[in-house]
Length: 402
Image: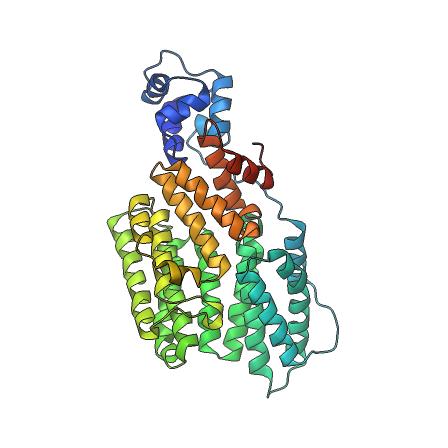
């Protein structure tokens, strides 16, 4: 069995999971000194297979990750049934009479509101029908309505991409399809706001495909190209422009942490700050929640992604509570989850648990239904030798053993 470097790999994954040597030793039923010896390669014999299996379970990695440096293939996940209904709607067309644009806009407003309220079950029930109706309207459009119906279609595909992106790798291919279709429809509509908004979703997908550098170039180039047009469109254009710069900043965190990567992220945050200053206040134009507060939230997220938990929490302390409370439920819940991750990085598990529990009270579907958040809850559960009642209850709601 190839065992060279096991201690080094255990140390790497222990630190990634936010465990101290004492934490990991307690979970393993061993002493801190035992962990030190294993990680330092000072033990005379390699750990038994049963011990390695337990370590892999605690660290939430395949056993092969401890035995070799070769990356393990990602597990195949199956999204929930309501999500699959939306996926199916991407690929099915039903012949039916074209609806009025007013009806489409009314349905779209409802779905966007459901997304921002984290009512994903309601959104999943309505979104397949909205996709079908909007495609019927586009098929029936004439020269006079072609642009406006494609603009609506772009917005529907953008919402579909944002919804599917919440379910991680399991729906990444379908989210990419939706984002690409959103951009294609926006270009037919020749609407700079729609093009920039759709480009945000494309940026996220490029980054999640393991190409953060390409994502940054795509987003920043698009923002710079459309900036003059967007600045003439009032809050809708400014909000979309600012969010595109923020999308580029988050994509920049996908590169290995380095002075250049951090500088690139900070420059893009600075561009968004300039746009927020032009706008002057927090608004929800075109469902963006863009403004000075959201710029700070993205800065906190970016710092956390670069594993700079202390700087993230320091930035969070500058937030105005009233401005934060005025944002959408979805945005506030995501911020609480980011705060939880920052607290994990700074070895503050109690604060991390409280942030996740608060997020769950605010938006249960944002916490219990998302793979990344369920994974965070599992990490918190594993890091606590005696999980409290709130954490155990949340873990059970997430389908975890507590």
